[in-house]
Image 1: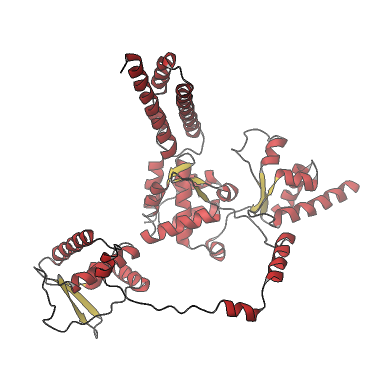
Image 2: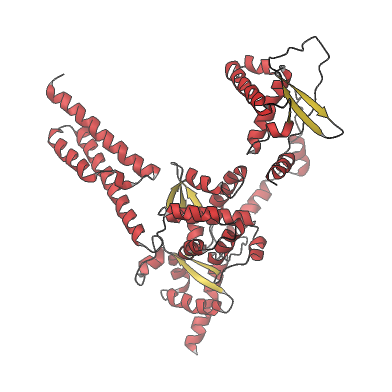
Length: 187
Length: 272
């Protein structure tokens, strides 16, 4: 009973930390969770994740580098960022409610998948060229700016475009590329 | 120049070329296997005994560092190829070109799990807001301070802009004549071309530029504009030679609206 009360308290605290935005970017760093929940925070997050499953939400871990092949170390978890995301995908209707038009979503998918295929980095002009096949020329630059501002893409001084924190938090990159390649065209 | 000094200078140039090559591969995202690492290391090793001064060793170290960066890129490339995420960019590009926007968006929505976040005011932003509020002057004083300055708008002719070096005469004339040539070519056998078919371009900014230049084509007598207000139609008709109308007849202006809405309407009609 005592143990149950202990976890119940910790889960409430974890919910507050994860849902409410405290910094410029959403999400909480592992070390912040350790400070707020104690050293067994990975276990608390595991319990919270299984509770959130019924609500179609999940606790997503985004590691600083690539996802470790084996069980992550405490140090890797401390430096990782934790978010609460939708567990399943969204519908076109829901995407509209988020303020995204079909064009914007398609453009984002094109930019992200192309960068993935180029190993995580691609020249901006190549991405824009591909976007022009689906979007009117005048909207390409506007959309690229929006993707960068939202944190999906990042650009360096050499006009190279990368995947930024939001893509790593929200997009299942493998599923996206595989689904795009296997999608059959109705055109 | 003594032979040793000459040899050193050539060596420095070779190292600099190696550094530039490695940097361009790194910065421009080029294929890292373009760089023959073994060959470069051979050159660096061959030149090493020649160096004596600290700046020469510094250049040598920079070259080694650049090669190391390229080797790192090569290893990342191999690693990426061996992962399940690897896809041929060409293949993906082709697939994207064949798919419709809705299909691409639907695929993305299945792989998209947006972050859930709630924004709220923090104690820090509350303190900042209070500080701002306390420092704010009474509204009466603020209004006095922000009384709008009276500014008068004016006009400036192209000649004045040239005089003030805001426009270049030569480049402008060349561009104008190129546009005149294009107008003559596009009207072909016909005598005239609808205004929007000529000024309309892929982008709105390009359309504005073409409309601006076209207004000079008409003003300077390279072409004439036929406007039919009732039918809401306008045509451009090029002259074989520029015709000067100065002093011959009364000149008048025709306002032409080139708004985004009109441009989009034209594009839709063109595509439809």
